[in-house]
Image (cartoon, rainbow, N blue to C red; front, side):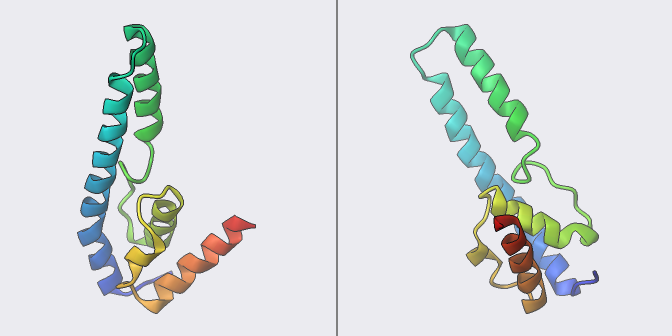
Length: 107
């Protein structure tokens, strides 16, 4: 589906902000793992597992293609990187598409 150029420009402007905020949250979680009172090897492997899982999260890495705009926004919402309220400046068409996908996935 072809969306407005303004939606794509807005997404490109916001994604680094959202990802940086999300990675700041992850870093705090990593610190929480590191300061646990556990064996060093246990902490290491717990942190390793978390980083492996997190590196594929859309809050860390995302494929930047206009054709994936709605899917990317839906993923960001589903992974709690952003809230639906944060897409208020996108077109109604985008918001309606996102809401449709979120409704489908809730079922």
